[in-house]
Image (cartoon, rainbow over all chains, first blue to last red; front, side, top):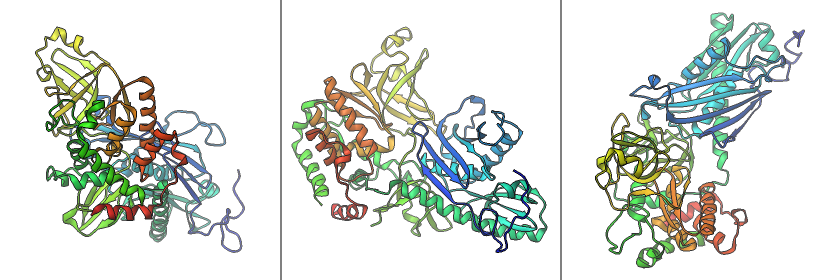
Amino acid sequence: MSKPEKFFDENGLRLDGRRVDEIRPMKIEVGVLSRADGSCYLEWGNNKVLAGVFGPRELHPRRMQRPDTAIVRYRYNMAAFSVEDRIRPGPNRRSTEISKVSREAFEPVVMTHLYPSAVIDVFAEVLQADAGTRTAAINAAAIALADAGIPMKGLVSACAVGKVDGKLVLDLGKEEDNYGDADLPVAMTQDGDITLIQMDGNLTQDEFKEAMEMVKVGGKQILEIQREALKSKFSQFKTEEIEEAAVIETPEPDATIDETVGIETEVDESVETDTEVIETEDDNEKVGAVFVEDDANDKEPDENTDDEDVEEGEINE
Amino acid sequence: MNKKIVIPGQFISNNVKNAGSGTYVDDGKVYSLLYGILNDKKRINVLPFSGKYIPSRNDLVIGTVIVVTPSNWIFELGSAYDGLLHVSEFPRRVDSAQMKGIMNVGDSAIIRIKDVNTAMKVELTMRERGLRAINYGRVIEIMPTKVPRLIGHSGSMITMLQKETNCEIFVGQNGRVWINGKDNDMDRLGVAIDMISRNSNVSGLTEMIFRFFRNGNDVNDVTRTSFEDTDDIRADDME
């Protein structure tokens, strides 16, 4: 690849036909890895990124554990085949730095204090690189974290803005990145708070201000795409009856729900008290869970019939 | 009544007083913390689609011994936190030397969580009827968020599973399910439990599984109702 003669055509469109404030098309798949707790595959232009999230899980080595909070580990890695010339596998100066700033990009949103001394591992693998891989990786990681059921104050969206031929452009392409005058990747929360910002090249103060406005608009668009991806995972979404049942039939066990955000206690409780069938003969004694002998069903005909009625009512609709 | 998928950071309500689990309040507004289903019938709760088990007091769980110390069995609970079962919490007096004979590394047991402190130190107990080591049957793992689905409306699903397969079933809150019965019954039950956990977001699931047992129908044969339909059903169900 060599430097193009000009970055804009006569209509002011860019090399790949985009407007200056237009991002590349993005495609997202949620939950693509079955071994990871949460995962996401994301294509953004010619970037291809795979993100996997594990945890919260036990942190080793133990000396890294923080007794009051979970830590987040973020690994940004480029596959050897992700670029034209093979890249030497393993961490290097660049990827270590990107991992660090990307991890910090998630710190304000991930509710780490709910999981003391645990770790949340985020792996972002760049399979194919085409400018803006760190932002693509962050967008994918945000979705993978949500998919893993990690409590977050919101998603993180990342986008780059840069300058080519003296003109500001959103979401740099490969040539614009390599031969442009400036590159400014930014990650932000849904409120527009900046959680990552880096800059390569030079911008004047006015250009910088304008660039920030552009990138915020880009971030909003990406956030919308991320939302859409998550919502469409269950296109044929059906309700979960049980939770309702649980909530209806349980006397609220305690008032601590406010504090234990993200940890549901209600459902569990009800499940226990409502569902047991007892091992022994004395049938009012509660063992505490679904403890079942084969013939136990017959001992509590009332309860069973009731349940079936409820269930049928739902199905017949 | 509002049943919908929410994602982290999504605005849910202005009713701060009703903010429940899976939500957070910022500047007088309630937002979702999780990717899951909104349940705002009484309190505003978000029930996550996925997530690891978090030990909580009084839960009944199935654990696996990973370490035997002179006075404790340390159990792995499918969570970020391991649990400690002190010998004194075993139903009868046990000598240090006998501990490995009762439960050794790799053995599983049905245990109750006695207490969890703020540092997430989990204390376990077996001093209760029904709590015991598991030395027969099978243990199946499902996602803990799907446990309520496996149990069903006041036990409707689990009751049906028992009736249809003649198996004993115990569901731990940490998503581990112990089953025991004839081998081919357990095979069928295993398939059914897998079906339940893969289709936990489908309505009429109990019926679907029932049909699976009766006709050998796979899930794919069942026509699914739409989301809107389900909404109505639930409205009726409320009353």
